[in-house]
Length: 476
Ligand code: SF4
Ligand code: SF4
Image (tube, rainbow, N blue to C red):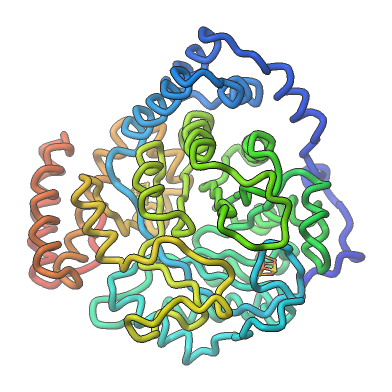
């Protein structure tokens, strides 16, 4: 059953809305003119891998001196290397259906848009799209659904099960994450049974009035139902959740503190923060029907990502193909842990013939990084990142994976780097053109030195040989 607003009652203290706009503005105002010493003290606290409070995050937000902003960015870069090493996890979005009963002012799929082509993939079509994705080397997907009665929890669960069964050559999808409408607890339980990874729901804006202005009709207009969605997911046993804000709907400084407040809520109630934070940005070029005064400049965007990195060191940060390759390259240095690659968000887009242009009538929004997965892999390798398709923790039941990589000494060197290398070897053997393959093996040679434990070096070498001989899906 899809949620009916009038049936919803807050049954539990924990599910009470927890964002107080006045509190957030008071914190921002109280730290309006931070001193250099205050800013540096906060950066140092973050570099010791401590979570920052709302107050401390506000100090960074209000730092305006270019020298201090540079120190914030440098701090984020150092922390990223300390915590995440050099691997970047890759995934691809797969849109399953764009029927929608909501009217979000910023979205091409809004119900009132009659020019958009409405499509829901049936089983055969899902299989075709997934095969096409697997044939490029993808191993991790995020499946996206509009909000419509057709996309019931059962429908979502079935589509996930379909995806896991698709095998093309050596290809398979090892982790499916979900981006879909809020469900009730029973609905989340149904979806959980299909063995999803992360359930992702973005609040879009944490500011209630701004929220009402852009969510014109439909169930999504109910701010509290959305805000408490991931609490219901937790109640249903889904403890791996992703939060996010759509930057450009309201003041970015407020949204950053909204996200931190959301993390605080999770940590206080469930003892574990969200797995990931996303921060899609409405682009300047957008001709959508929204107040453009809150659009976020490249400069502020870079600063806010660096601040998020420092404020929540152990939470994965996702940067998507909404951003151009140049912006992605710049921002990746400041703490991004996941990106999408080879992205096509057109309905049935992955089976489109090469060279066909983006068709905005089939898309939710325009993307700015249209490179193929291999172009992105190649670029990451050239820039000394290890592209990773690792799904090891999730499959070995090592939950709270980002918390572990942050808090367990040596975790990255023992697990993340070897697993990134092994999934890269699979990619090089199965999908990469010769030039990428050559560069990839050179990078692996170099990065082996980052695995300190000699025992692991031997094990990784052995497994690389096993993969070359045809074994797959080896991990630590
Ligand atoms: Fe529907 Fe999502 Fe678009 Fe809103 S953002 S109109 S809920 S598809
Ligand atoms: Fe993520 Fe765990 Fe793999 Fe590291 S080993 S990349 S934390 S799944």
